[in-house]
Image 1 (cartoon, rainbow, N blue to C red):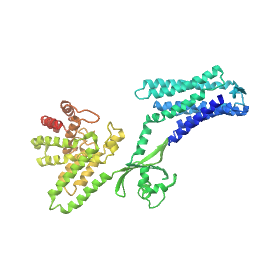
Image 2: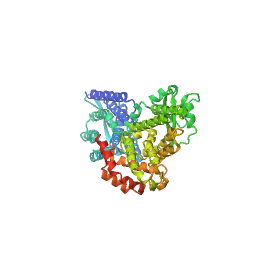
Image 3: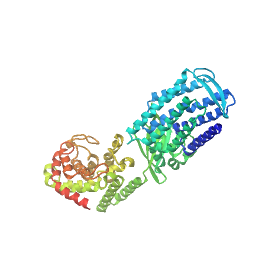
Image 4: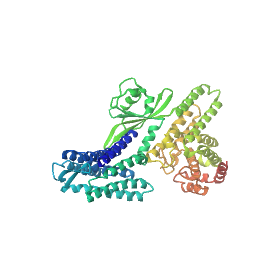
Length: 566
């Protein structure tokens, strides 16, 4: 009966381990090793019960110890992941070394008396068991069990204190199973039972780990991000090592470049006329690894933005390349449409100037709308800031002598205002659509939009608009984030180094940001918004222009009240 019990437990452990490995295509080392070691432990118990000789029983006992020595360590590693903690590398090595030394002592059973002084084969009730006398170093095993019990207790307390961030329920469940196994071990030692119920404890451990595997990984943000990226159907990823040998590629990349399917892993990319070799590999050969690569590839009728990232591992700063391909077909076709218009319009500019300028204005507004449709944080911002500029310029007409410009200049500023954020069209969707605070790297990318905007303005307006408007529009796009105190971007200009049209735009831009609701803040009251602008005169804003802007308060409040009512 006992032998049958051990056999059933062993078969069930094999079934659970097999189903876990089949169900999960990607190997998770901790879970996989735990399942395998526990299965070996259950096999050892069955082998011991059916052993016909002392030698066979000793080997069965060694199999049994594999699970008993390493399963608690793996349980602690899983709990560490659940608690979002990172064990120091030295401590991980120490725990592994302790378990390995203990397993080495187990291997001396039958040959030395340091772990078991004496061992003989017993038989009763239809099954075999070992009668053993413990040696001096056997104490290391209960010490290990007590140590891991203390660690599991610590994790339970830690999870309770951090239950807003950590799943206390999952940590507690896993820890209780660990305590149960330790309790069963102590009970067997105290009662000198020849029947081991530890196998059931380990089997329940496999069942729970299998059950909680998906949930445990759900808490792992890195795993979730990787899985989400793999499922994206607009992003292609190719990985090459530092010798330009093929490592891996996702399905989307393989559809883009069918030749990838003919490559073998660790194969150097063939020096052929293949698109990947011609357009990518040869370019990487001259890459210094510092400047980011931004290249647009045309594949059939689609356009893809290629970005190359350096891969590092551990202390190695460069082990390969990650090639990211992002579908930019819609944006590129829009650019192509603009270029086509430019080519056709240049031939007719003399006789259809007014018509051309109208079309160009519509395109600029269209691009501005497209920017806003991609950026959920600033819906309606371009339209509102344009209206603010109209109110502001109407007031500035009374001060043309003081500031040294005329009414035509103000008209051109009004016309150029919708172009101030066109550069955001070049910012990655992942950053532009992020509903929260940017990381330093993401903010650095976002701060590139003034430079990109200036390039777009020049490409659109050069040869079509007069030089005055081109310069004003370019300055607004490029410098509207500069600050009077020199702490703005992209060029850290200060005071009158900043073109006056950009100083005008800065006031309108910030005012709208203050009184508008964003995903990361509520709209400020008019009192608070105007107070912030007044406090920032001479720091962020031109102090003289700012005073005139403050005079526009009544008109601006009516404008936004009307906008909010609509």
